[in-house]
Length: 544
Image (tube, rainbow, N blue to C red; front, side, top):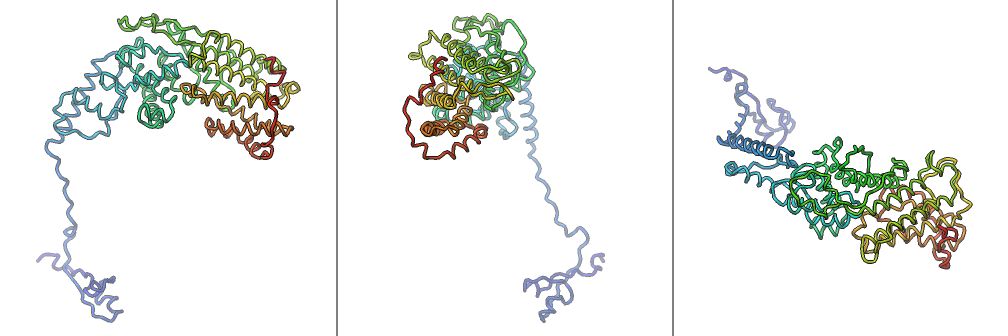
């Protein structure tokens, strides 16, 4: 007789509790039936041996006999592809890696395809749309002919630091860029940076019209590709000038230009000077954007900017004479020459360091002469321009006028004043500061709203007029003339409404106190009318 037959039987839920659907304590009789006064029908069964009552675990299904072999075959095939590509291009690294980690396993027929066909299939499936070069070899360049065309028209006249004719050959014909092969990581990094910079200059409507994609999506995609490309060329440690060009273009949109050490070489001297001027301009923009002092000193732009010239003789590219044409030259550097004059004037007016003359008792006349000197020099640089016929010449002329108006305002109302500095106030009346601030805002708004500025509107967004708005709001609140106060309040309100799209959260924080005072200004003063001559330029400013 088995042992489990000798064991006491197991007491189960009685039939009565099971039928009544109540809990049973499995006694004889159970408590539930005793309290209810009904008969308890016990249920017993023999105890099963230990472990016999447990459910058997389902065994995992065995893998198909050929699955592991197929996986191994695919792994070997991919590895052979990588090795063959590395051996075929010893002068460059592999192209930008494609994300194959999330790809599904191809079918069994894919394992029998040739190496080239399988590679093309992976490229077509995972590469972003519009990011393959014309040869279709899987290299991520992101620079299409249309993007390069927009860059040449809208960015290159303002930031003339690249050689666009050589880039055209790289994009359209898959040729070399200077001494770099088409698939070289440096060429890819520059192409990605140009694409990202170009997208930042387009509006949302233009992105939808040109590329049928939202602007935010294009910005995120090209920003990621540019960061990946810059990481591959080790941009933090390299001394390659083309990598630095790509890095500067990548910094223009966020407008953060950290210090960058550059070694001096003869063949890159001209482009280095232009890059340095653009970096110093970004330094001014970043400091002004946050109301802080620039990192670079006022004498940082001692080196001149050389005019446009044929510079391809400095490079040892491939044995191809197509790049040595006269058209292959640096762009006209007029804009950065004008901005160099503006930077010198701004640093002299606003940065009052120990060696600056404004820290040793400079008077208002000398400060206004600095602004007037900028306008005179800038007009001399643009004397042969034709603003009515050439769009970029018109833009340069407008920028000079707006910059001169801003420098006049900074001369009267500097962004930073050293503690205890002797600053002349008796020369400039309160209404003068108010008039200069409003005139600058009107000039900027007129240029910003002009349809002709559209190709270069991205540049006007870099310099937000928070300082002029702050001065205008403070001065109109302190104005003692009711008629002037009413006129300027109405004008400032219109200008703030028109220009507030340029303001970010940082700028609104800087304007918080003046804006609160301005909003509390009585609405009744806005209905006051004044004569037109009250809004004209003060007489003593006409000397400058």
